[in-house]
Image (cartoon, rainbow, N blue to C red):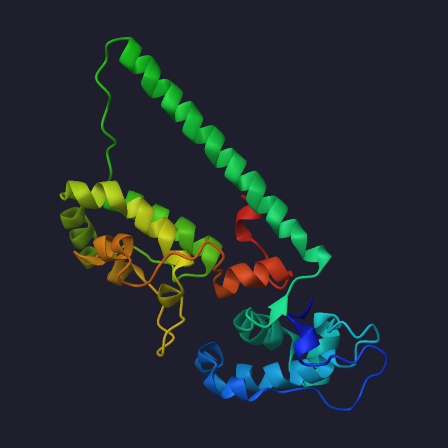
Amino acid sequence: MRIRNWERYQHYRERKPTWIKLYRELLDDHDYHLLDGEAAKYLILIWLVASDDDNLSGELPSSETLAFRLRISHKRLVENVLPKLGKWLERSASNLLADRYNSASLETETETETETETEAEAEAEAGQAPRPPSLSPADILVEWNSMAKRTGIPKASMTASRRKALRERLKDRQWRESFRDAIAAIPKIPFLTGSNDRGWRANIDWFIRPDSVAKTIEGVYGRVDPNHKTDLEFAIDMGFAKNETESE
């Protein structure tokens, strides 16, 4: 793990001075001001730690050593601080394993979709009418929690009020046809994953409101950013958290 664009903070190539650059533009950095006080403080200290890199490349020590130097518990560092600093940190080569896992997952999903399409084609050739998928409130919750487990979005359990609301949503054909696209988009929309002035994240009670799916698809909450990562996704990529889906 290293500091992203380290050369901006320390451009000397042959020596390590006792200071680093800190630009005034930080005063107007929206993402910096969205950080809580703890994360903002440790970001500055992490820059200072990076200045000790003998290779002058902004490389950081192991998370255990970093935690010691910051005088913070290792657990708090990897669970509460580092995941919030994705804009200013980047992965080392050892963190590319997560990318390979994600690629393998995508291939598996594609194979499953192809098998489903083949079965539908066989039914059509046999003169059978295609069977519409039967969805229940529990099915929606399973899909929501599958996304939440991968991304750190709040998981949900079934309640009487949620079951009632989901039954109402499932009566709407457009909602039925769009909800999966909305679930897939949520982790890629910064506003819905905590990048707002309240730190609010999308949850199931918001999702099952009558207009949330449509607004998500229409971009009311912001455009989909394919490169955006939630705090958990970033922590997994950096090797600070385990991808729970790997053992399934």
